[in-house]
Image (cartoon, rainbow, N blue to C red; front, side, top):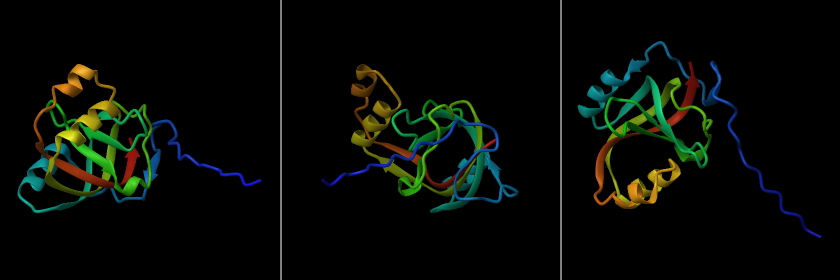
Length: 144
């Protein structure tokens, strides 16, 4: 008899000081406003940004959105799904380390993110156009 064992990586609760992914140096961290300005003027940006989590993937914790004052926020994906963040990280202030750039998100992906976030069918169906947005591939997240 052959048994197959499936392992699921489950992130711990979003408690102060918890780290997910790689370690980082937070001394050079920038706030969300400075981060956005720097990404707007560069092809890509590498560093640490400090911000509040506006939304998180309720399915796996494989992405989050940082609050930048806009409706949607800044998309942060956990690079290569190497780690996940807790599903209760909404509203927490975090440091995020990684690489960011502006890119186009397809309607299909926007709908997928909306589904992961627990949006209603009507909200998902209302997504009809791709969107240019800042995306960050995170290698580490620390809860403050």
